[in-house]
Length: 124
Image (cartoon, rainbow, N blue to C red):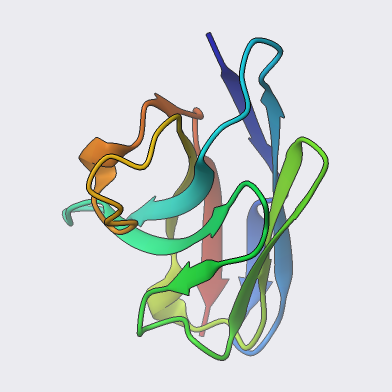
């Protein structure tokens, strides 16, 4: 069993920055990787970024490339978000995958565990 606890969300003006954290309790196994997804009101959950547990590979949605950076330090995964835009407003979820599965990092059904989400609101 894995518990994921997100923090760091909040209200920020357009152009500002936030750093999200996801603390993972993974005593019984090492995950294959971790990801961040987001869901805006009335929209489907979408992929944001992912990282292999080794940290050797990172993946980003086109909409956040160059603005967001995912990283990992021990059992905490971070999402540094810069140059935020109003369209980045959403609930952000941390997710953990145990295995490679199809190795498609943007597919939410390849993740096994999810956090409760943290709200990010970007005002214009």
